[in-house]
Image (cartoon, rainbow, N blue to C red; front, side):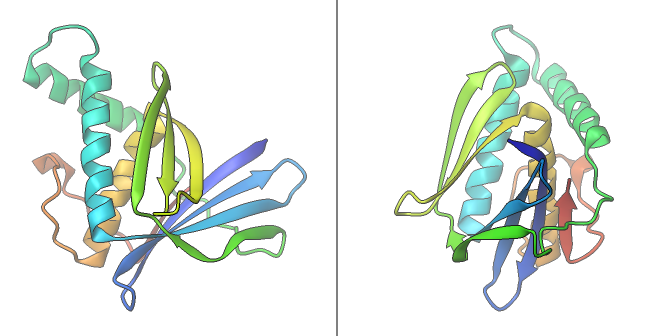
Length: 179
């Protein structure tokens, strides 16, 4: 079982894609790294899907006003980002990590399955159904969403993604990572 999950986004201007790197550090010190190419289309699909997922999670079975939903989403996001570690450097480049696949997978399919309240399985898949399933909680979904938005800004894609005006991301470099 993985001791620590690290996530890193980098924009590759030659490919005009985002490179998503996910590493799982094992208890014995080694680990594995998965690499995925993400297109503009896929990023847009991911943002829209996670927006819907977050809204559904917040709204639940109760009837609340749209303003209350927005306030709850913002509170959830702030709480999730406060827990995220953006300062630890991404270390999957060490020789103790095994790279999965010779080249990054080109992700074209996103599947989201609800496991339980606040728990989901995200499947990042190629058109041939190769890829990775990752179990996430709502906090990690908020964090991934924020990282996707920051990466889009870093790439200069200017995509019309849904985000609130308070959420205009200030990019702080060519890559984003979380540990």
